[in-house]
Image (cartoon, rainbow, N blue to C red; front, side, top):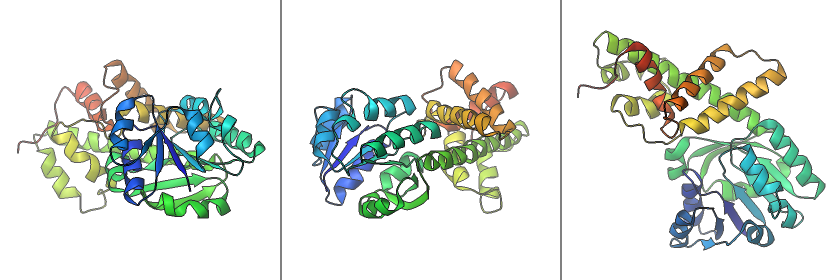
Amino acid sequence: MEIGFIGLGIMGKPIVKNILKKGYKVLCYDINSKPVEELAALGAKAAQSITEIAKTVDIAFTMLPASAHVEEVILGKDGLLEHIKKEAVIFDLSSIDPDTAKKIGQLCDAKSVYFFDSPVSGGEPKAIDGTLALMTGGNKNILKNIYPILNTFAEKVTWVGENGAGSTVKLANQIIVNLNIAAVCEAFCLAASCSIDPKIVYEAIRGGLAGSTVLEAKAEKMFTRNFKAGGRLDINQKDIGNVLKTSHKSGAVLPLTAQLYEMMISLQKSGLQSEDHSAILKYYEKISCLEVKTGK
């Protein structure tokens, strides 16, 4: 099976590396030539255009920043859908809004192309070690044929329904992840205000009910002041915006998520959009006039 991959950023590049490690050949494209060159050195083939990938592969993966980018790459002039063969698969790993996923799915179906909206969870660390979780919307029977490729970079692949369902489940995931980060920030600010080292708080609570995957992934980044992005704040802000857009349409009332979005807007205005979303801590530090850091 010929594989193409478009979008080689924080998540896309390590995913391709894991696919290559399992012996698959991958035709890659990105507007930035540097990751393409890096992957070519590991055995990937560099594509000169999206059209080249569309005309060559049986399955094209996309991992792009937002809905508009996914639409452009798949539906745009000289995009994938214009040139890809019938019965081919377009497998989008991006986090996009459900309406866009449904639209793309309908247009692909009209051309006998299988589309999957399959956002990932786990961030850069799990992209690197190949243990991502996928929440996948699309044709369940066709999905079974793709499992061997998906298992090169994902520990768990869950079919959640038709097109749009994958994107909706990812939005639910993003509510839990980002509000969990905010809760950790609040807890650490309370500790700091009472002159208690946040690292001690972390060690004390991690084995109890307050322990979580988010706590394990983000606590140390906070108290060591390491905000290098594994999950960029602006990408998560985009996702939370899509949560609210979807909830306004569906009728769900999400007051905590709405407050979180305003916090993210404030951080963006402060120029922190390219930092890790654990930098939500800086919002709390600013309004509390304190700094969270470990003494050891």
